[in-house]
Image (cartoon, rainbow, N blue to C red; front, top):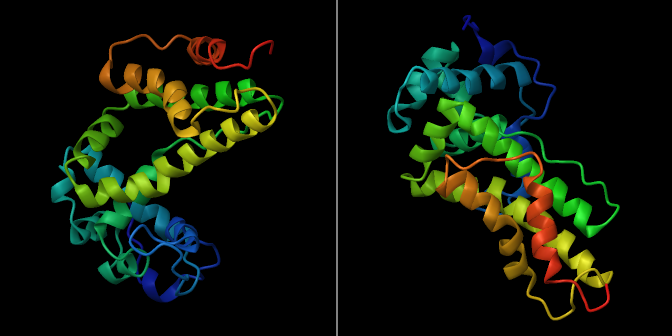
Amino acid sequence: MGELPHADDTETESHVSLADSRAREGSPQNPGSPVRGRPRSEAVERSIIEGVMKLLEDGVPLAEVSIERVARTAGVGKATIYRRWRGKEELFVDVLRASEPPDPVLPGTSMRDDLVALLESLRRRALRSRSSAILHNVHAQMKSSPKIWAAYHAVVIEPRRRTTSDVLRRGRENGELRADLDIELISDLFVGPMLVRTVMRPDATLDENLAEHIVDTVLEGLRPDGA
């Protein structure tokens, strides 16, 4: 990547960074904490994130990706990185989040349709990860770092779980689910089969109709009588 001379001094920082956006919701270590500092240059931040990705693509283990090494690769000073992230755990979470596909737009026509959209997003994400050695390796390495895994879980996984739970609660309120059901447990029943195929059975087929098949199969036993 090209050199970015004096990026710390000259950038007009008019955009809000990924890290700043996350900070508005509160960091994993300090939920609800206020945002501090000024908006950051999106171009400089992108060069840093791409610098991390380049190192990982070159086969550098996650544990050996230091802030100093990232700064050299991205062509910025270490101070530029530390103004955006408090350490490499926060940086890695933003790198991983930047590699994630956008959250799906839910049709809102029914609980069933929303659940299919959510599971289809998981299926497409799994196909993408399978075709990308870097994403597969990074996710595998990330689990050996409790801090990175906890942060990733807080800012990526938990919001998705909340979305699924919200869809199920609306379905229960609308009479699409039985009123006696445990929402957290039911959420696992829908998401579990897709995760088993994408994580525990990496060679399993991910057919185009898999999301619909899972949702319709589970709903068969969860609908109220006569629904």
